[in-house]
Amino acid sequence: MMRWLPLLLLLLTACGSAPRRAAPERPETPAPAASAVPAPRSNAPAGGGYYKDDGPGEHPPDVTAIPDAEPRPEALNRFANKPYSVLGRDYVPMTRLGPYRARGIASWYGRRYHGQRTSTGEIYDMYGMSAAHPTLPIPSYARVSNPANGRSVVVRVNDRGPFHADRLIDLSYTAAAKLGIIGGGSALVEVESLLPGSATPAAPAPDPIAQIARASASEQTVHLQESGDARGIYLQLGAFGNRDNAENLKARLALELDDLADHLVVTGSRGVFRVSLGPWADQAEARRVGERLRQTFELNSLLVER
Image (cartoon, one colour):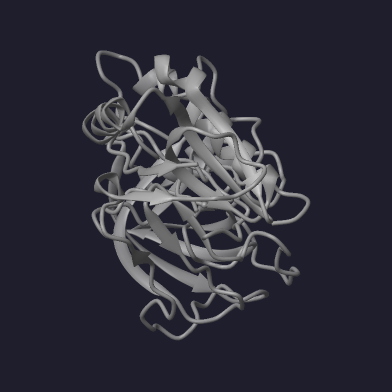
């Protein structure tokens, strides 16, 4: 779940939101969205380490001995497959198992998210064979192949993310290691959906439900008159139909935003729960912070007055 940005994964038990994801997305009761979180830019070892110590630790297990996920019939999660919004983008998850095939950049998330909840409400295990995807049904299964070395793995999709425009899927540490992409932090992969009880990909087809990208929200101002939300000027980062998903995104963003983390809040009104930064003294200050989010963390935000 869920390398989300220099940041973040998750989410996100899909969320019903104004909408993701995204990272932020992640709504009604369970499942906080997990790697609905943005993913760090890269986990590549640098000088012997990993991005923000996200590596496997001193004594990781032998990943070659960890079996791939085995596709099996599962009921789709009640909350993780609803439309959601994270970091200025709307996402519409697939609501049934079906054909999916796409090529794009895979990243991975590790120790910093190990033990946190995914969009299904399950606990993320970096040594399991799982993945986060913005729109594939949750839970579902997919084969991920690395064309550079011919390796492939089967993962169970149980989380939302990544939420960067240039990322297709976030893999668990083990899945990424088996594909040989740990050292580089990310790599081009091919993702194919798998039907339960079969190792054969569904008939290739373009993603039936595309992500809908909003225009950059950082330059927009929206006036919301909603009871229940704290008054003031905020930078909105995500919106969900489930408070657990919003709280999950908030927790993951807090790991990445350094001194800005203290300004993270979750507000709710009329069944929509928003993750925001604020309140700020005026629009000028809010815009300065929004520009910092964009340049430092590659995050878009929506300036909102309540």
